[in-house]
Length: 167
Image 1 (tube, rainbow, N blue to C red):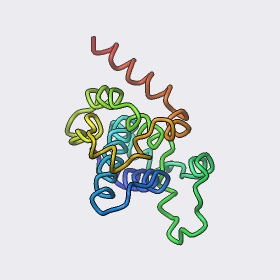
Image 2: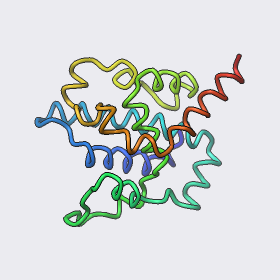
Image 3: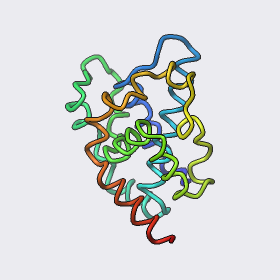
Image 4: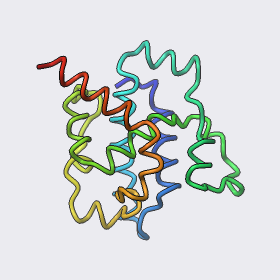
């Protein structure tokens, strides 16, 4: 994975954890962050598969979190350090929400992406009780639906087209 995607991955992870907070406790917070980071990393690898794509992202910018914030009713009023929100990529976050809500989709996406690009995504593709307990809001399909629905069709088309091409 291109290091150029690091700001988008960090911002997308932070946005998901802000919008869908984990259960209380350090262990839950760490486990929820691992799940969100795995989802955003895999989504970013799908969205920006080449170094040229990453360069174009930096040239044009990811778009920011304004629409996602509006959609979820996120309050930015007390966020003194809101600059990170400019690095949120709506499509990447939407795809990450799809991957968090449906482990089978995450598994299909992981097969599409070179394993070296997305790293280990076991917490995403095979979530257990610990993952669900740590991040009940982040793993809840109904709560993720408004965000996931934004760009789900594009993700499913990509996965379907790539699966058809490899047959």
